[in-house]
Length: 106
Image 1 (cartoon, rainbow, N blue to C red):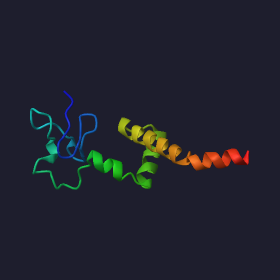
Image 2: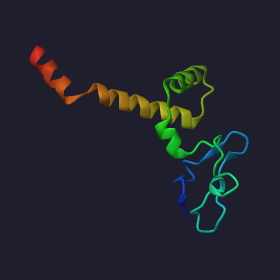
Image 3: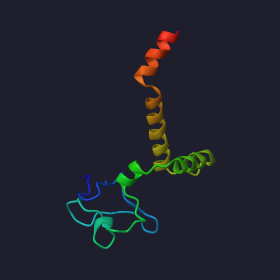
Image 4: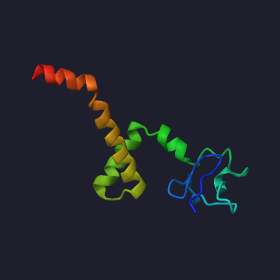
């Protein structure tokens, strides 16, 4: 059964991660509340939640991930993040107006 946390939106494939405790786990049978969304951890700033990952991918994080990929020490999640970023950058570079200008210049 694939669950989704009703507070932070994490899933089994996209879990919250605590630097000391690792990924979150379900604390109820419905699989709609993760361990890091209970009152004990709710305001803990060190927990990396899925929504935070989408918002806060800085240039320094990207360069760190690229270095890890080159050294072959990156995790599966880091490689996926890098692929997503590269796809977004390619789409941004393929602006429809740019295509029209390129056709005119040819």
